[in-house]
Image 1 (cartoon, rainbow, N blue to C red):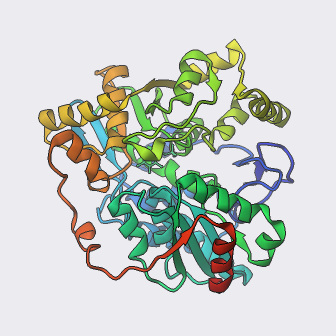
Image 2: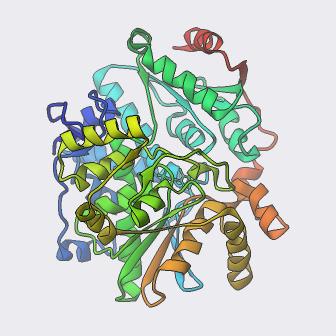
Image 3: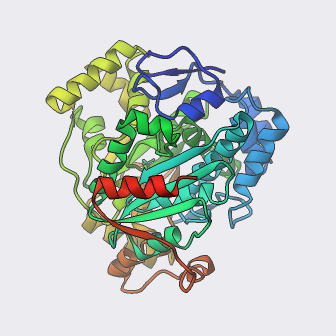
Length: 461
Ligand SMILES: *Cc1c(COP(=O)(O)O)cnc(C)c1O
């Protein structure tokens, strides 16, 4: 298997090189040259596999430059950190299936990908005798999952900037209570945008980037998408064991990473009917699917903050396929976006989009109401991101089909919003209780690039 760029500017590379490159060197996103297809017989033969066993079957279709036993170990170690024996269990409630993706260490679905990515990074760096200094900005979920993915790993240091006092209390503790020597939290007196701008500046300084071996863990790494493909297969195998109805997935969407993994599963032959793309008020992708309107708006802050995104970084991967895998068309579309703030598609292209996807945007009032309704009907507490997807599924997907709703975070992670909706907090898991009272380490800095750069230089191994 070789990997190419959506912008057409790299010669095909191996899996390991694709992981280490992150963003393609021509500014595009990395994709496999083809998607391996899985026959119905092969699918059936996977029914009784455990999550890590299934992960190995799927991931190994895309990886031919890591020996089987090493790859198995990397996968087993990644999912041994999950607190549920099924890793991503399904529960049936109120006519929908909830696919619980939040049993990892930071209680959000990003652990599924970042535990794997951290292990792969460590493996490749050791083999190549290299080191990496990961720098990233976070509004909460990605940073904590990334820190837990690489804590204590050899050859890697991580520096995560978060806006001081602007993450949820649990998110902040999940980051600052990690006191391994290779982990550095920087709380910036400023906004998430200040953090992100400084990280962009640091990566833009190519000499600095080279000299200090800077690396990233943002949602565009192919290994992250690949790890997420596994739970679409896992969920499909579980629900089709019980019923023979068409299967739909509802996906609360921000950067289009999670739902793109669903699209990849479909391309591999997994019998998925529709992928339901659920958004909050930041609904550019819903406007695109329903009204062919991909035009940038302002970012609105909502009760599902991990979906407060206008430019969905993984969307370029989908556009590449939509545009018949023509890099020139991708380049043209992004030039258009830069100049006019929008991308236009033909009616034929939009017909293709609507064959695979449907979409709805759920506002904050309805999200809070959905948490209340679902609780009063089932006693089950949804986190606000999951609630967007569940509400969307109940609204749009036929009740005689298997509706699988991706639960992207544990409700205790967003307890402020759950309390706002229900009047009480979600029960707090032991792992969260244990965070309070743990020693913490965090550097508080002004939103000043020189100060941040000096801190990095002083602490880079
Ligand atoms: C990141 C995140 C999302 C959005 O996922 P994308 O892959 O960016 O579309 C949804 N819910 C939660 C809780 C998240 O952390």
